[in-house]
Picture (cartoon, each protein chain N blue to C red):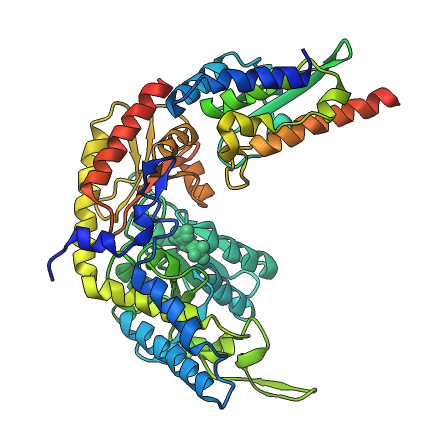
Length: 141
Length: 405
Ligand SMILES: Cc1ncc(COP(=O)(O)O)c(C=O)c1O
């Protein structure tokens, strides 16, 4: 599946929920499926500065694709990251660099994107793109 | 006057708001309170009827605006029982009031001197002093807090000395709700000739403030935490201190005469009020203080104490509840954690149910670090909050906990 297809399928999954509670329960569940970052990378270097909960993100190249692993000490944050990673992990640097993250809004998590939500989601997306661009540069060298 | 919660709630239009289709329950009053119609009206009235620049024009509107602005100063002086209305400097808020004093102290601090604060201070009453000490090679000393949220008075006693050039501490902690025994502390500091600045941001709406009785040199607060407008605050300073201090911003009304060679500064309080002031802010602040006065600060304190007690009791019925800040002297602020659940998770779910709380470190990171916790969930009450809202909050909290279990 392409990034876009994965994003669309997530949006569809979320359309099943009428109740915010079900939506959030699902996000919490998704957090449990997170591809966890190796403990040894849970260091300041991989910490994404979001004010409220701590988020660690690690990226490595495997067969031309970027594989992300992450963790957070807040489970809802973890769920949202897990959802992001489901879409962008295992894709080429180029595709990730060009990815459209607006599906987060369509899922109904728009509030988590506002600058006041100091949960690191926005910095998280920036970091994902940064990793992608860095790998892109490396590849072209 | 009897205390009529329904009548009070009706004064605050925003309380009718719904969030995500649910009735708003606003428990983030420590961050800012809502504004009663009287305050909103005063702003509209000012811009509709006598907007004009102050202290400058000869024309009718300017005279009216100036009179109203200066009457506000008198009212604020009266509200906190200042001896003289020239002791009231208008600022943008508590943060600016503190920065003003810290900056003006640049010339009064020397290498090796000490500045005293406490470990429960808001960043606004910490960073300005830290910067001052850095610039002047002075030492920042910090009075520790004990586990229950009270200042460690033994430490405090040992830290007071002639070397201390100013002691800055909060009246009430925004995280723990602790009411510091400031009158006693000020008296102790005075024995060593130390001037004391009180950060009253969390106090002004919740208990009686009498600066003469306290005998503090400086007292700071923001209007927006006391039903007033944002962007307006007060610095009270004893006359002799304000006179001694250097201005920290230049231009506009703070000047008495200017030539290209030399400028002489205006008298207090004007020498601290550079540029066009926030006139509507002053008027709306008076409307807010009058609102408080009408209900009666003692009635407000009593009502909020009851709410605090009620909410604390209900919270403690919840398994693994941990309340941070358990001083016997506290205002209507409850910081808590449940088990090892991250505050952000609980805050997010409460928000979905219409309950507004604050989560995180509340701009008091050293204090949070002191307790070795990731932050807290903070419910802080105001005069318009009700027991029904507390009940709803407790239900919403239980629902959140079930989801996160
Ligand atoms: C204890 C304390 N001091 C200072 C401040 C800063 O107030 P302001 O942002 O209105 O300047 C706050 C606000 O949160 C506070 O709680």
